[in-house]
Amino acid sequence: METGRFAPSPSGRIHLGNIFCCLLAWLSVRQKGGRIILRIEDLDTARCPRRYAAQMEEDLRWLGLDWDEGPAVGGPHGPYYQSQRTALYQAALEKLETKGLVYPCFCTRAELHAASAPHREDGQAVYAGTCRRLTAAEAAKKTMRRRPALRLRVPEEIWGVRDGHMGAYQENLARDCGDFLLRRSDGMFAYQLAVVVDDAAMGITEVVRGADLLASTPRQLYLYHLLGLTPPRFLHVPLLLAPDGRRLSKRDADAGLDSLQDRLSAAELLGKLAYLAGFHPSAEPRTARQLLADFAWDKVPQTDIRIPEGLF
Ligand code: GLU
Image 1 (cartoon, rainbow, N blue to C red):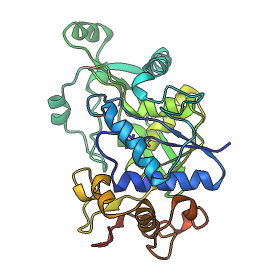
Image 2 (cartoon, rainbow, N blue to C red):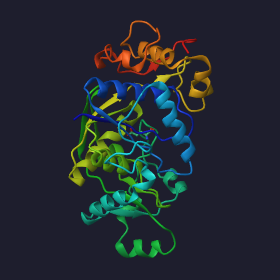
Image 3 (cartoon, rainbow, N blue to C red):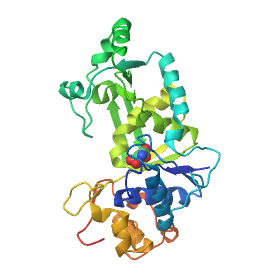
Image 4 (cartoon, rainbow, N blue to C red):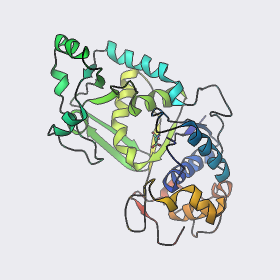
């Protein structure tokens, strides 16, 4: 059975970019008669308080994007809050530790910043490998003074994905990405580890998400491999840009659902998004169910989509 997911990190009200992603994820899986799981990615509990998650569920329901398993409805793959799944991440971490692939990192934010490692296209720095070279005795001594973060040692190997929408994408893990975080020094598990553990444990077969996460996919595929798990199919969705060409962000108040709801019905909003996505010839109102007949990945552009002035 095809199984997709919504995996929001509710740190505020849902905005156009999230809605666009959720709509495409929903259409892609529902068109195949598949199931959808709602998983709340609230690892950063300070930024993602419960009230935002509850609001997110209400908003998705208002949009007519339904799901089969999740926090309120339950199901066999719970709990559905990442903050309640840390035992699973810990077990995966221990598995990687037994392979000798995890090492403690004591670098401070300032040190990481100062290290002259190249920066990736997605703005993240490639870790210079400073703590990789510490001996066990040096690491033990440092641990007495400061709780370390944990990193995964990555090889000089090319890992790539054949994205179902964007095509081939690959990285040399050591060169383009570097040893990446599995757990922060404050104990918070990293997104990369949690998302792999959860998508596998929840039996997700299809991941539809924003193109900003395409660059995370080689790291995630490497984790699937190390943990002996089967990866899903990935389809990355183009990002929406504001009319002036900027990346849409949570700071764009009029792209948030609280503002959109004042002006538009759910069908009006979805019709406009379907038009932007290229699979509907006009911006006429359409419910999610009505859009099922029209949706086709090959009509959706591969490049970022600029929202025309005045569309919303
Ligand atoms: N929680 C992530 C976000 O809201 C999405 C992660 C994913 O889809 O893999 O950006």
